[in-house]
Amino acid sequence: MRLLSLLLAALLTGCGFFPPRGPSRAERGKLAQRVGPLTIGPTSMRLALLNVLGPLRDPVVITICSELQDKNITIRTDKAERLDLVLQSVATQAGARVRLYVGEHGEVAHPTFACISAADGPWVTLRR
Image 1 (cartoon, rainbow, N blue to C red):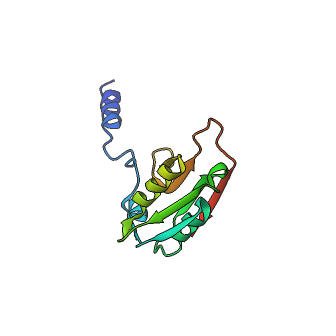
Image 2 (cartoon, rainbow, N blue to C red; image 1 turned 120 degrees about the vertical axis):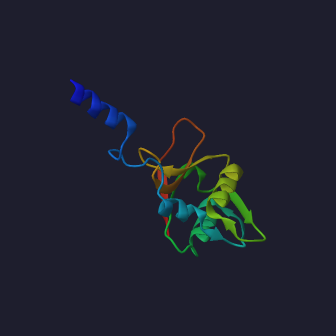
Image 3 (tube, one colour; image 1 turned 60 degrees about the vertical axis):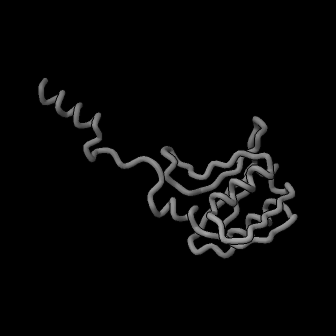
């Protein structure tokens, strides 16, 4: 019984048995990449995001709700900005939610733009 309680205590405290939750440094680095200065648009959200993804050093995959792909977007920056900030700005212009990390514990950098409507999808995937 004593051994069982020690084992339970070790498991609950996470003494190396559980992997860390959340994105790794490499995954956070993908969205911390600098882009710009940018002068894009007005153009469709799909084309604007493809222009943002083009010069990135580390590949990033973006998924958008197909309903959003034709939204008119303008991206203008006078200096290089972090990719995650640019993506949040695009989401605000499109009236969409953006989730920067996916996975059970949010461990993969995969920005996903969801429609505000209850029925998201079908989805469009943009790759660099």
